[in-house]
Amino acid sequence: MITAFLNLKGGCGKSTSAVHLCRYLLDKGEKVALVDADGQATSLAWVGNLDEGIKKPAVFRLIEPDPLMDQLPTIAQGHDEVVVDGAGGLAEVQRAILLLADVVLIPVQPSTPDVFASAEAIKAVRRARQIRSGAPKAFSFLTRVVPKTLLLNEARETLGEYTDVPLLKTEIHQRQVAADVMGQGTTLFDLKGNRAATELARQYRELFEEVGYGRA
Image (cartoon, rainbow, N blue to C red; front, side, top):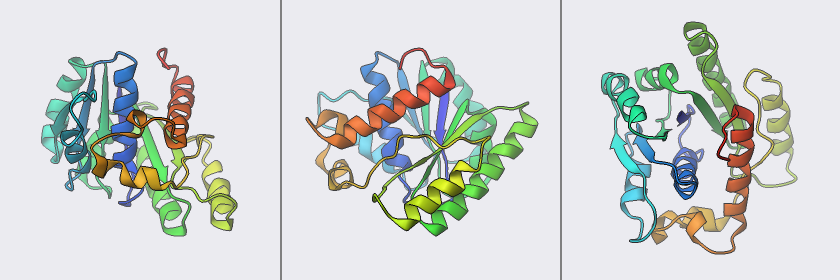
């Protein structure tokens, strides 16, 4: 299965989500590949900086549309799961990913610019579905959430209106440990007793239940 994180905006948590989904799947015994399609190569650098002894996915960097179209299906054939960290924007790279992904996840911070950007990402998903007879499955989720704010309530309401791209119930809260973890050469799943890892695991279980994935 190919799972891609996409959004127009940078800084919305795509790389953090992609690296941690890989780490979660590796703990489930899956053979996992991470495809970094973002020019900033954040997830590539993160995996490369992980401490010795931490499970790591195979990593590929594909930042042009033609190599993505040519190589992503082959990578998927050689792995149980492929996680794609997509770039910001809706250039040809994002369109290529949308034509190949089984599942698209749209991380959204509860801010007006991010919610506006998510609407464009959802439109792109809909266009891909016209070409692919309904695929890919797609979901949005709220990340870097600060509880009990007006912006959060507005984001929930707006994203909840896209019934064809459901909003996952599990929200990822803003936590300092999540902001610091990349620089520590580790992942949240390798730090003991932190709530951020618990939230991520809960969200991934919810996702796999939604897509009918049997190894949640």
